[in-house]
Length: 342
Image (cartoon, rainbow, N blue to C red):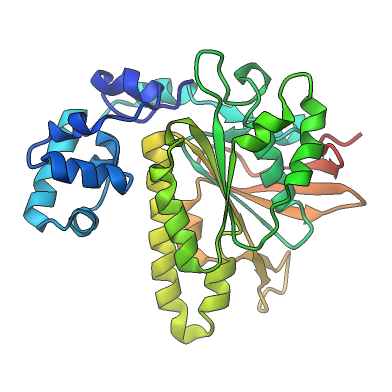
């Protein structure tokens, strides 16, 4: 399975297998002894990449180190990986080898350029009952399909796993069972359920801790999909009024960049669902806007807006993407999950 980061060819084989470096490998970094290496491993800093991309003050805080020591360790990690400039053709080659998850609908996959992209953050927003959580459930299933069928599973690697951070108590394993029936000749429902790690977040702080602890999961090496459903719910409930907006956005920014770093250093696909609000001063067009402001807009690689249509039909529109054009398609949600319109 090939989830690639933009690192030099020396580390390429380990990146492709998403392998976890042992404590002894981290010890090879200047300034890292057995005690510090063990502490790094326990807090989820298990790869040279994770050390090379962490902010200096954050590493200093996690390891109870001085900033000069933290800077020395990070600089050594970056030097080992050869971080710096690369040519556009190298980036293109990496991107061509990235995997995508099928949504279950050919029309929606076409809209997304082949499916949900690995190594990036995809935001799905819309009003209630537009299908955000349904798509999240569907991706937990389809990500576990073999690569040939639009999933991440490969015959020469361990079964992949998904992480589902649930902030509103909407995760339903019964729905997973319904969706797996569509693929029962390819995947086993017991295996699918076994490889979905569900975490119920009760506050924004708890939500952030769950996301940060993903790197500490014993099955970290097999995790290829992370879902946060919904990203903004707790932040919206805990920070009320304009006076708390700056604090909320700062904390949200920290959470998003933690997820972004996770996507880029491990190659996992990250899905965040988002709520909406109405823009009262909009006199023309659709007044529905995603919550989170510019911070969320700048962090998401692809933003998908869902809205209702007739019956089980829903409309998905790409509203922002560095790769995909603005366009929309119609898909359907039924007992089998996300499908094309029949």
